[in-house]
Amino acid sequence: MTHSTCSKSKQAARYRQAALGALLMSIGLQAFSAPESAEAQKQRAHDIFKQLIEINTMDSNGSVTAAAQAMAQRLRDAGFPAADVVLLGPNDRKQNMVARYRGRPGSKLKPILIIGHLDVVEARKEDWTTDPFQFIEQDGYYYGRGTQDMKDSDAIAVTNFIRLRKEGFVPDRDIILALTADEEGGTSNGVDWLLKNHRDLIDAEFALNPDSGGVWADNGKALTVEFEATEKLYGDYQLLATNPGGHSSLPRPDNAIYHVVDALAKLQTSQFPFELNAVTREYFTQMARIESGQTAADMRAILQTPPDAEAIARLSKDPRYNSTMRTTCVATMLAGGHAYNALPQRAEANVNCRIFPGHSQEDIRLDLVKLFADPQLSVRYRADSGELSDHGSDRQAMAPPPLNPVFMHALTSVSQKMWPGVPVLPIMEPGASDSIYTMMAGIPSYGVNGVLINRDDVRMHGKDERVKIESYYRGVEFYYLFLKALTAAQH
Ligand SMILES: [Zn+2]
Image (cartoon, rainbow, N blue to C red; front, side, top):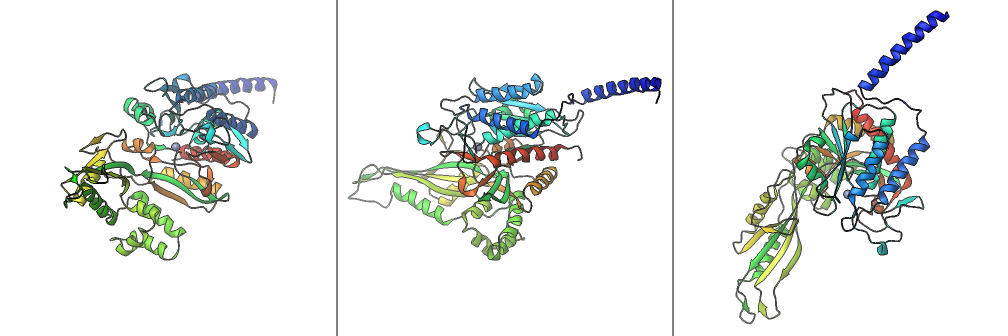
């Protein structure tokens, strides 16, 4: 090779480099820097987690805004454009952070949304062995309020946004991260607020919410990788009977307490109808492989058309399976009477329902009215605020669509890599999370979480909340692989 051709080819190379540079700029890649060491990545995962735990985000005296600001700063420092990292909220204490990781320009694919609440359940220092707002490392665990619910997952999302960006990864679509307020309490739920006020900023084909789902283990050995794909709707109802009352020495058959007790006796012995949806069908299909004997056979039998009634009856004895097959309603509070020697003028009970997706709170109120069939008894819907009304809200949990195939493929392949042979199970959450808002808005939502927790070490909302150090870093790695698998340009 002569000097001249060399310099020519150098010049050509420069042109090519310039052209490549322009191309990379145009598709949003930043200049490559030297790859980071695994140690540096781990340190960042640690620092972000520690920072989040040590910012008090309780509703009573903390600030979600401070945590949102800290995470926004991290992302901007890592090179995310300021315009793509915004803080929004109804008031100064309840700002939510929304960050957009830009995907391939011109992608026709709708974004993927990740939601994570920044607020934590109240924790009092005097109840805890450690200070709940100090990030303490002890005996192989990280301690602090939010280490399980869910600052671990918030930190994991921010850590991986930064790592992927530093690596120059360009997803096949935008990935949006929303870190939000008031999931645990308070009146400014961030997901609800964002959907109502800035839907365009967080609109997505589907959402991931690491608040639910998880890798469940015994003594560190993974048993199932569960992900939430639908959830039940919460509803409280007041049963109330009133009566003129009178002297208890002259009882009449008409008695406020008896009206309520009769209604509760009917509730005790009746069940809502058996139902399946796309998620619970898959759940029982998978569980039939994990269970054995009669239980496994019953699970297969309820999947038949028509479902086997005896199999339903047997499975209904297990509270977990029962709650997966139907709406449940149960008496949770009872009060009545005002004196030992007077006929009661008033009796009331609270009935708490977990409503199967596809039914509204008003549908269930009407079902209860029909079941009790007592014109002397009123059945009123009790809102979260405690307010009672003669008409339940028409709010309903969306019946889940079939599981998204891109999502399923990414989840199962990464799970098999990290926890080989462990079944991946879709669940219908009987409790409630912020996914209820995204699902009601028509965004299918999946609770996916790669942090392994022993079944006997669930400390969410409790004292001395903690997460195994090793589980946390494996969880970081899981979401890194999972986000890449979800958005690698191959679909
Ligand atoms: Zn939570």
